[in-house]
Image (cartoon, rainbow, N blue to C red; front, top):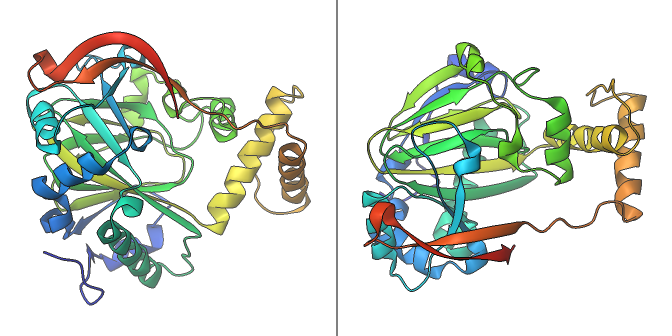
Length: 317
């Protein structure tokens, strides 16, 4: 199947539209049949990726332990060999910016957001992005939150998705602020097993997509099968305003010691915080944070779990 502007990508259920962005929502879509996500296309996409265009991780699949997450690299392999390692291993791959590497993904991304804009009154994406996830059976994505608005699209395989309320204690405000400042990783968000009692859970199937409220924490566990999915991320004016508020609150909390901080995105207080965020950046208060990754394995389809340990080295992205 190929994308066409005349086709509907999402099966819109009218009764859900007024809740878009307010609660977790699952819709059906047609992209699990799209040629852009065939093995042959994904293999070519992997081969086109430079070192700064992907993440590859392995981790303990038996428990939720972010400390077990390891960074790796892909080198000297064909795309087909990488997919073979995923099939038989314990690997999670995130391909960044496929919409910049191949115009087909860019056209698809535009088609998706054009359709969302037509269906959701007042929705205007000021920034849009796509990532592709290819992962082994039983792989986890640990508890975390994202700064942009986000939708998860399932293409192949099945996964269990836990979505948590975007408020304390599930969403630690001080930690969210550090993520907004670029000073903490998304998975640094504190997680406790008791949170699961308040989660909305989904067994996501091929041809289903899931959208959740802004910054809602979530975690994912693959079923016993290879998974292919992709995310779409966006900013709108309201989302951008919330980012500036969290950014300014991070300055006030972590630089000036303030504690009781509101998240209002309108009124005089918002404009003061917007000015603070701008002044902080202009004054050089925020240095560009480049991620330093400790890489200690290479993807190897012949190694146990598809992972071959190599001498550790640092990679800065």
